[in-house]
Structure formats: structure tokens, C-alpha cells
Image 1: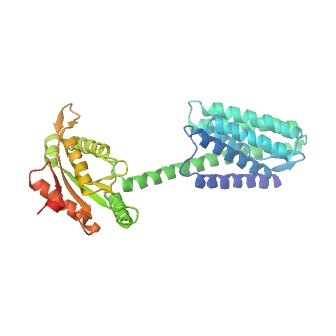
Image 2: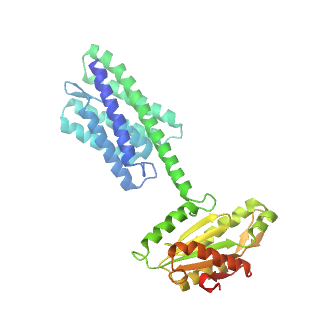
Image 3: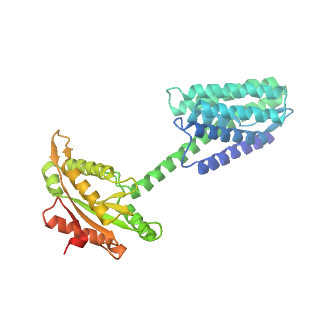
Length: 362
């Protein structure tokens, strides 16, 4: 019973360490495409986890039985050779710190074989499930040979080996399930976060993100920024484009316009799609004169761009732009949206394909 208790203690520690790892590194989990620095860091973390497991292993004379191989297998599976080898080295050093004896040298052979085999299997083009089964089975087989060599008590081996195999499989499969579940959950969470603030078609900020950024900039006025300009942009006769060519072609126009707006503004300007064919550009620390220059540049760029269709043809598109700027056209910064929208309305009513500024409406 003591054997089962100690191995389940190791299993509980494995699960706890995995949740700790997932919480700390939730934004940048280990993958084979991770940077070298990230692989080194997580290799060290995995090696430390294995050393913790050794401290709570079963002591049989000078032999220590535990689940130290689980973190190394995980490192090889998710990160490849570099983190697995780093973790292996730390496990070997940790075992020698505990004691230099025959069991320690056997442990070195055990860890080297498990690590190299796991690295080999992780690179094979087989299903994830098969990789896990192969890694765990091989580690259990190697453990069996090593423990038979080190422990001469047959009655103890008869109890220890099958229990170890069972708990090793449970620990291995549970570890992979936990990591896979947490990674998928984190991926979906980040996806939902992104979708809540990003326009799915153009990749620009959506209206919710625009409102958030706009309110944030209002709070920064006269603190870190002294002025704020807003461009309100609308595609001319966009309904006609949809009616003539279809909504799928209209979507291509919207996506292309989003790209042109991003390319035609500065990297700190905030470009958003506020709905339908309406776009906005927030220009921090920008005078009305500079805002008009940017708006005119956007208008000309769009006018001179050929928008390709999936049918192979091209169409020409124009935009109308309304401009408002605090403090030059708008004394109350919270009125920027309304004033820019009024200027846009004038641009649409007086011919389209033009830029209008709020202070020149009258």
C-alpha cells in the first residue's frame, strides 16, 4: 500500500506542476516553433519539475522510484530535442546531488534512453496518441530492466513493477490530456478575446474596440497627448457594388480598403471598421491640417487603386471623408465623432469622393 501511496503522491505532484506551468506560461506555451530562449527556459523548468518528483519518490535502499520521466517526455513531445535534453541534464545532475552510486549511474542510462527515444518518436509522422503510447511504453520497459537490475527482492518487484506501469500510464495520459485541454481552452479564450475587439472581415478594430480606444484617448487628452483628430470614412455607392457584383465581391472591396487605410496611416494611428462600409481613423497628437493631409492622401490612394474581383475583373471605388479635430474644430472632445460624422454627411451631399472638415461646413 505504501508503494501505491507514494506513486499517487508523485502523480498528484505532476498534475499540480502542470497546472502551475499552464498558468505561468499561458500566453506562450512550449512548441517546436518556440524561440531558442523559450525552449531553454522551459527545459530548465521541466528539469526542475523532475527533480521535485525525485524528492517525493519511493526509496528502496539507494534506488529512487518516481515519475521524473513524465516532464522529460512532455518536453520532447511539445518542444523537441533542445528542451528535452536540457531537462535530462538537470535530472541527471539532480540525481547525482542526491547520491553517487550504482542506482545513480543506472538512472543516467534510464534518462538518456527515455529522452533520446522520446525525441525520436516526437519527430515521427504518426498520430499524437500513438506517440504518447510509444513514449510511455518504452519508458516503462526501460524502467523494468533497470529496477530488476537494482532491486533483488523478487516479492517487492512483483508488486512494484505492475503498479508502476499502471500509475506511469495514468500520469502520462493524464498529463497529455491536461496540457491539451488547457492549451485548447487558452486558444479559444484568446480567439474569443480577439473576435470581441477585431472585425472578422478586415482584421481592423471593430466598433467596440474603437469605443474603448476613443474613450481612453479622451482620458489622455492634455496629459500625454495634446490633440486628437478623427477621420470618418465611407465608401461611395457601396450598395451599388453589392447589388451589381454580389456581397462576396463587396467583402473583397472592404478588405482591400482596410489594407489601404492601414498602409496609408502611421503605425500609432488607430484604424477601425465601425460597421458596413464605414471606417474611422483616430489620429493622436495630430493637427487638423495634418489630418486633412492624411485624409486627402487616403482619398487619392483609394481613387487610384484598382479593386480586383474574383471574376478577374477590376472596379474603381471612391470614398468620402469627414474630419474633426480637438481643439481646432471641436471644443468638446466627446463631440469629435458627431462632428466628423457631420462633415462626412456634407462630403456625401456635395458630390462624394471628397474630404470635408467640420469647421468649414457652414
